[in-house]
Image (cartoon, rainbow, N blue to C red; front, side, top):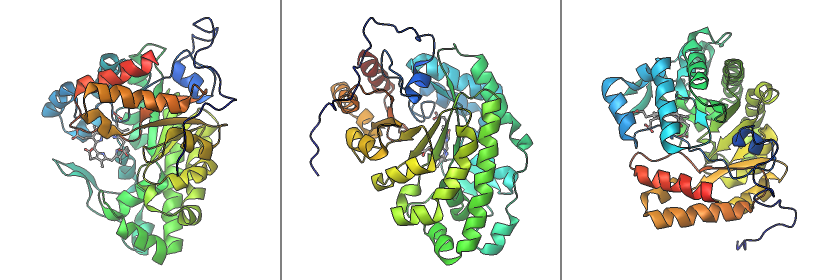
Length: 362
Ligand code: CP3
């Protein structure tokens, strides 16, 4: 469907007259989450601290990934150094989606070069009964320590973002026992054993809700909920099997701070993500940002949506594609610049710096 670029009549000017505004003391990202006008578009990048950075690889030569996540001083340092090196406007805590599953009884390992493995996956309704209710988050105290250490080490202009997986994406890892392309074990359990599916999703949603509130109490000023793999579902099935659980996972956090609700792979889900909650909806690159924002509704903020693969190109292409995303946001208040998904490990650092510079120049 052709969709000519246009500046909607109700869009605010990109820059308020007179340079800095009266509220310029408040972090750009927080103002953008509330759709307030900002001097320039805030920018941060999913997986901004990762293997594309030589400094990160050097840390990882000495410590395993889970050990890094569980060493708050080091995890905080990795993110603080990254934020300072890149000049981005937010620090997401250095952690992962999956540690939440350990105190729920799942046996998690990050095997060298293989990504996450769960040795006791949930395959049958009886396995769902063995998944533990996460009544308190004590065993995840290291994550709250990462939040505190990251907050303590950064300037006040840089908000700290906490995060968790959304129920579908976490259920997918529990059921597959690792990452997957088609999520067929997950869908089998969902379609064949609907009541066990809802039990599992309910347990995960309550765990996520408690976990996000604990991160907020530790100092997270925004939280992002990653539904990285839910795009494999149709809108109809999202409504039947997922929506209420995502809403339950998000609701308590949303009463306290802005929530960024992110999914990939299926732009047809955007109105349903909005319905499930989030003051900011994360957009991947499979849809143009202006069209996505219309689907979400202009009464919500959006985050996105450069294709991470653009960062594998030359610097002129990085600049051109970055500007295109900004043009589609059209200066409307409530745009946070990000990629449509995480930075790829093979990305040259200078392209990331080029992107940040291009966003800052507007
Ligand atoms: O920089 C940041 O954005 C903060 C840290 C962060 C990580 N994982 C670090 C990480 C965040 C926000 C995540 C979330 C996460 N974890 C997601 C959602 C984002 C997305 O990409 O959709 C998902 C799906 C996971 C699960 C996960 N973690 C997988 C599938 C893998 C293996 C694949 C891979 O990219 O390595 C991980 C490992 C992981 N998480 C790494 C990092 C830096 C690499 C581990 C290493 O150092 O070897």
